[in-house]
Structure formats: C-alpha cells, structure tokens
Image 1: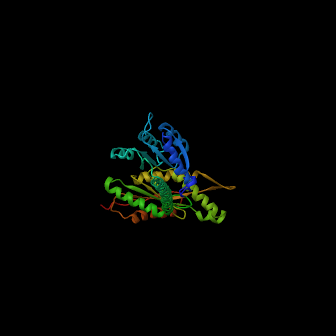
Image 2 (image 1 turned 90 degrees about the vertical axis):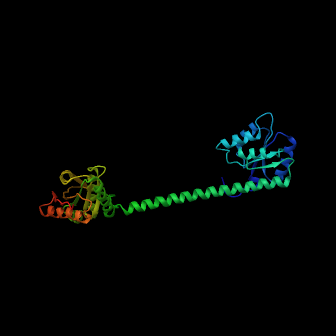
Image 3 (image 1 turned 60 degrees about the vertical axis):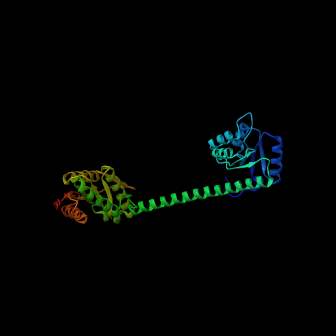
Length: 330
C-alpha cells in the first residue's frame, strides 16, 4: 500500500448496518467528506465485501439479527490475512462497559455510539485513517531498515571473506591460514593429536611467466590450486602462502601420513599435462613436510621447519617430498 496519506476521495469505507435510517445518516456524513462508501447489511455480506474490496476502514454495527453479530464478524475479519489489518470501528447503542471491552477484545480499534454525532464520527474515522497511515509508513521504514541492515551484514560478510581469501585462487590467504593453525594448536591441548604442515612450491615458476606471460602463470596457479584442493580431506586446509607457494594444514596427522599425502599430490601434478592455449605444459612441485605435536610449540617455528624441508628439497633436485621432524617441547 502507498505509505502517503490518501486523499479522502481515495479512501474506501465499508459501512455495515441493517437499519436503512442509520445507513442514510452515515452515507450523508461520509460522502460529504469525499469518502467512497461500500455498504453491507449483515455480517456475512461484510466478510465478502471486505475480502473483495479491502476497504481502508470498516464501520461495523454490533447488533445485526438474524445472522452473525458484529463481534463475530470482526473476529472472522481478524482471522484472515487479507483483512486482519483493516481498522474496525464498532457502531452500537450498547454503552455498557462489557460490550465495549468485548469489541476491543475481538480486534476493534474504536467505537461510536448511536445516535451518531457527525463531528465525533468524522473525527474518529479520520484519526484512525491517520494512524493507519503512520503504521504503514512505519512498516515500510522498518522494512527498508531491515533491507539496509541485511545489505550491510552481507557487505561485511563479503569484506571478511575477501580479507581472508586469495583473490586469484580463492584459497585461504596467509592471514586466514595462520588463524586456522592457531586454532589447531589449541585443539592439540585437548586431544593430544599432532597436525602436519606441508609447504610446497612450483618448480621453475618464473620460466612460465617469462616464456608464456603472466596469464599463463595465473592459469597454472589456479589449476594447481583446484587440483590440490580436490585431493585433500574436508577437514584439511589449503592456503596460497604467497607467490607460487602453498601451505597445507592436515589436522590429526602424523609426519609419515603427511608425507604420503604430499607424495600423492606431487605425483598427480607431475603426471598431469596442463593445456594452455596451444601449449601443453608439464609442472612439478617440491614439498616440505613438518609436524606440530605439542600445543606449546611456536607456530612460526613449525612453519620454519616446513620451509627448511622445502629448501632442502629444492637443493636435492626438486620435484620431491622432503620431511623434517620437529621434536616435542614437553
């Protein structure tokens, strides 16, 4: 609905009364103000009219024999999604407190007593139309705020993902991997199970950039990342450590098992033929494996052990897995 205040000739009022004289008084008073008027003579008719026309407000007589009375009509209106928010003003000659309370309990917003005072009737109708407008404006404002908040949360989520993700390979970046290693270090304290780090490097990577261009280098990095990601367990982590280096975190894995994983990946890459444009390229990698088996160990030291193993592997001829064992501190 339009949140702006409707002009009076845009407002539709459903009047429900079984007395012709009451209807005439109401019609004269309301039509002089420019309101569009619909008429129903009983509760059943009011339900049909309200469902079809969705008026802006309903003036509802309480006593309408022999069908359902105004209280039951209002109760049913409030049970329907399409009509539950339409304000209902009861019209009644009953002035005792019990009937007034009943009217509010079934969902009415106000009441006017018969015989009608024209000024009072119009004042109450206009007051509730204004209140309805404010409620609509508030609902729309709240919806906009919710949408803005959702968009802000999504933007924050995307920024956080971007801050932890390598933009080329979509792997974890160095920052994210360090945090994951720190978390794994905490778990060692509880479970006393080691984890393995594998630091690997693409052999002769500069040659691909120099010979075929940096687009080729990016192609190799992305292809390698996808291959390695597909070859590890769900609980394992893989990050682009920098340049052509990648770092694996293998939870609850000993040195021997980590070396087996590294060898499987090394062989798969060495055996694979990478097709870049019209070129078929062979790629090899060297892997350094280290183990962290105590929660007191420094993470930098554990990474340095893997880096040292990688360095030794490079000097031993490349395209191989080299492992080094880090002694427990406690």
